[in-house]
Length: 92
Image (spheres, rainbow, N blue to C red):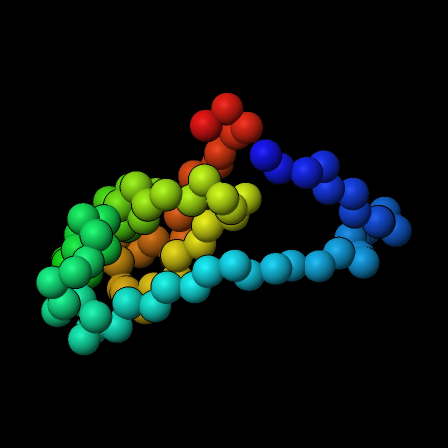
């Protein structure tokens, strides 16, 4: 489903490529009080959640139409985590 992507490079940096954002979902405190949230959104809205669990619930959403999916948060994780990522593959 994904097209081959060619990037131009000068050896150090990639250039002449574009980025298209197809969907943005912002969950505010008010949104988290709504009844029509998906199961993963409901769990993401929990006030106390481990960084790994947050990533697990985020990845439960359907991102089949996208090559990248990000979650940004203003949470302060108790374990000092600043960032967490899972690597995907073509088969997954």
